[in-house]
Image (tube, one colour):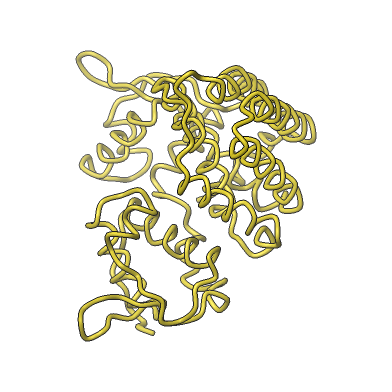
Length: 309
């Protein structure tokens, strides 16, 4: 295993992480082919970040490149639980997390300038703008006319957290009942495999990031099947907003993840039977239970310093 590895962007790190998670939940043996085109489709990205991710994983001894330049898995999936820990210990761009943490803690005003942010976080303008562009795309900051930036509502309190769950209860079950709802067979099978892996014990070894991203894939996948672009977009944006508070929850509420995976499987089974009324009811019940357990069990905003980063 190489000691020195090249740095990855946030997108490349996510792709490498998802490739590793895919290999683990499918329990692939050493020698399994790792074709770039197939991985790009399974991860939901283009070939370029997959190529970078595979080179990175090769430098860490997870995969190896054969004489024909194709990659294969170098070790059994069962041996990869703690491989490449840096992909799971550093969940995101540090500047992104520092801005989010400061905003959640109330340490940043609603309106800010780039000069103020550069001084506060000690970064150059090009680095700051790259991060602000991402935050803007996620929908919790916007550029003002003229100069400066304005923060938009963020899940920064227990009330805001509960509001997000109540909104999800109003749109996710309705997405399943959409007249355009269509479950893709292969995607449904993949979601079932992932949720079954978690329920069968994967929740014990998966990192907080893996657990959150598996949850996001489930909810965003069903929202995409609705055929309603506004539902899909809303669920995706809410996942982006709640990830900052749920990374740490995933780590401390591992036993709950098993039950949630079981509920996900029940919903997927109902969809597979084409009983969409039952699936929508199960989704509404699932979100209500999650709302009650997460919002009322503890004050998750009592210590903003425990945010990842």
